[in-house]
Image 1 (spheres, rainbow, N blue to C red):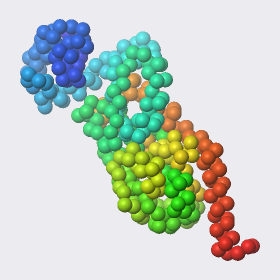
Image 2 (spheres, rainbow, N blue to C red):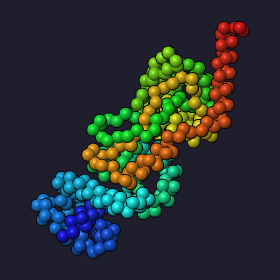
Image 3 (tube, rainbow, N blue to C red):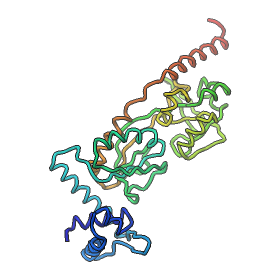
Image 4 (cartoon, rainbow, N blue to C red):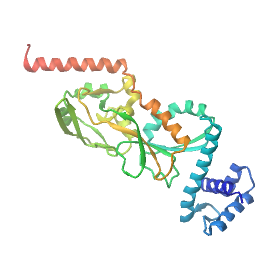
Length: 324
C-alpha cells in the first residue's frame, strides 16, 4: 500500500464527504478509493469512517487521524516545493477563515492578484463573524480582528487598525456634530456587540481621558449590520476604520472626534493549535499583510470635513467665551 497516496485519498473523502467525489477528484475509480480506506483501517486497526447511503463522516478516531494525515500531506508538498526551490509553486487548496466585512471589503478585492500569481492554488474562503473552530472546520489560517480568545493558538499580528466614530453627513446635519466624547451620550448609537468595546469606550487626548457609555436602540452582532445601519443614517457608531473604507473615501460616511484617540485593534493571522503553518498559508498571510498594513489614503471629502469640523469648534468657542 502506498501510504502517502492512501492518506491523500482518505483526506479527500473526508473533505468531500463522498467516495465518488473523492474518486472524481483523484481521477481514479471508486473501488480504488474504497480499497485504500479499507487498507488504512486494517493497518491502523480502527474504523475511520461511518458510512451510510447518504453520507460519509469520520469517526472520532477518523477526525484525529484526518488532522494528522492532512498535515503529513502538506508537509510532503512543502518538501517538494523546497526541493524545487520555487516560491511560486503553490498548489492545492488553502482554506481561510475571516469575518464577512473584512473578507468582502479587503480580502476578496485583492484576491485576483494572489490567484494570478499562483494559478495552481485554490482558496476556500470561509466568511463568518464568529470565531470558527479551526481544527474541526479544517481551516489552514484565520484572519481575526481583536484580542485572541484562546492563548494556545499560534497567532501573528499583521496589521494595526484605528477605531473611529463614524456617521453620515445627513445624520450629523440633523442631530448635530459631537464636539467632545461626552456629547455622544445625547446621540443615537448603533452598537456592535461582538467586537471589543461594545457600549463602553475610553477616549484619550494627550493627558486627558474620558470614558463614555454609548446610548442606542439598535444593537447588532455582525459588522455588515453595523455598516448598513450607519449608512442608512440610523445613528453614529464606533468602528474599525477598515469597516468603512469605501464610504470614508467617497464621503458617504465621515469620521468625527478625530482629535481624540480610541484603543486600536490588531489584525492577526491565526493558525490551528499544534500545526505548522504551510508555505501556502504563510504566503497568503504575507500577501494580506502587504495591503492591510498600508493605511487608507484620506479622501478630499474627509479632509474638507476635518477642516470644517475644526472651524465649527472655533466658532463654538467664540460664542461661548466671547471674542478674544
